[in-house]
Length: 385
Ligand SMILES: [Zn+2]
Ligand SMILES: [Zn+2]
Image 1 (tube, rainbow, N blue to C red):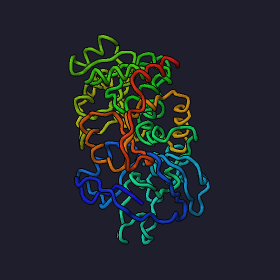
Image 2: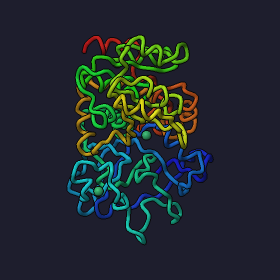
Image 3: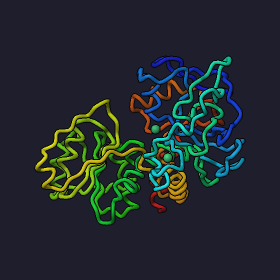
Image 4: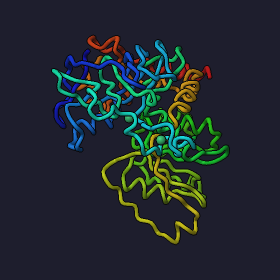
């Protein structure tokens, strides 16, 4: 099968023929239909982070079950599925108490040592990043990392459910559990932050303030449900927020991950408000706390991992919302491209020229397809809702 293989950090993606194994116990062979270009994959593929190479990356996968291995009971041939990098065993106390995202037995989703590798090239093993390896025509995945989705959800939209959607929407609905009438600040309105905005609408938040440095992105954020926007490159975000909400915000979600944003986030909080750190901007982001003020104001800081999502519960839930048009997934996908355009696609994502690119396997070796929705169509779609 064709796959985009990375041979060394920064070497780029090379389209090659590699071998995918047969499903063993609890494994599922998925025919990949669409896979998103998430920046985390590029970071892992570019920086020397000790990731074993050669490797196939790609963790925003949607496809169709082609074959299941022995013992697989949750999925069947022909099911439409979404994969995610959350790995969990399914039977430890954390998993059984609904916190599979905190499972410490993640190795249980891997093949036992000594077994043949899932992917190989000339009999040499090829690493499968996050147990998924979606930048390929097929992905051989542990069943715990796959969730079934409705058959009517387009694959290029569904692919985003496994990462950007569960992270953004999960931060609001699962981790923070925003309630009706509360105020929310979303800092960073890219492909993840926009999901936090649409889910804040669903949670009943009365104020949804979007902060970014691009007027274009802020206009987009309004179409997703932001009630107020602040351009951080034109005015001080803390002052502007306090002018709009003098008592501060109940929740601040940081989708950027810089020290400056985290610090500003703390200064935007209301009495009892919480700062949620979602974005990863670098290795370590020091945050200075005035401990007395922090405690006096009853504030809290929490990190968010994959939207505190339980995959088999949350992906079908969010897929259902998406099918009903409540998450605006079609407006998140800027364009679809072929697998052979992955290097230039990532270049465009890195340059900030596109919000979200998705590889579709139907067009894997063909010309890029045009933008899925024009701005006019997006507005018309909103007007209908
Ligand atoms: Zn991702
Ligand atoms: Zn577990």
